[in-house]
Amino acid sequence: MRVRSRIPGVIFPILAILAVLMTLNASNAGAQVSPSLLEKYRGETFSSSSGTDLPYRILSPEKIESGKRYPLVLFLHGAGERGSDNRKQLVHAASDFASKKRQDEFPAFVIFPQCPTEHRWVESDWTLPSGFGKFDRKPSTAMAATLELLDHLCTSLPVDLKRIYVTGLSMGGQGAWFAAAQKPHRFAALLEVCGGGDPSWAADYAGIPIWALHGQNDGVVPISRAREMVIALTGAGHAPEIRYTEYPGVGHNSWTQTYKRDDVFSWLFSQQSP
Image (cartoon, rainbow, N blue to C red; front, side, top):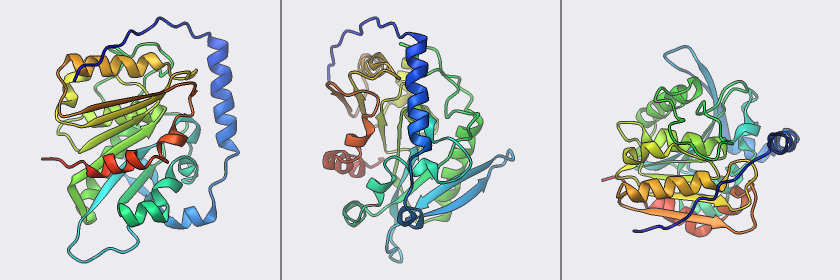
């Protein structure tokens, strides 16, 4: 496929960015996760080989049939959901994956690890207009523990190893770009929302279907971060598929409509590794 786009130079005033981040964090701090949702997502803590304790929540299929294997989705939350309470990471999208409609149509394991407040999934500044050369090849403490958790669950649960997916929003979108590039490839698809990757890594995504979605008026993670990834992937001859969606007039909160879309769920769960 060919994607043509011009990336405009955009200046983001530091005070404006800080104001947006403070607003997002304050909003998420007051957000409530319902008791019924907490019941659906069992709370656990994973102790990694490096000694990191990673809290996480896991949604399981309502009925697990003997001899059957199920998809697994790794969801990486945004900066406002960091902490250690093992519940705040369910503020966004968890209810969509857990809805009866989605579970009836796409029964799956869905895991929501929680990144500590002082860390990031990728130790890289998401407010930069370009992420070129900004990703460290070494995973952050939280990312390393998360990938180890994923490998553990894939051996301890009836997971379909050809249907493992990664998705995330904002800071978690960065994390999704990072995780999908790791070798050997763990994921059958990458669904990324309003984050940003490192376009110098474009060749590392070969063989992974990708769908990136971003709000055109995003004042936290510049739209240029999404555009440059699509351009880099296209220039690298990415296959099998790149999908890219820009939401006109939408700011940073592009995840709400994304995770309510039927076509997004259908696309994600239709992907399968060779």
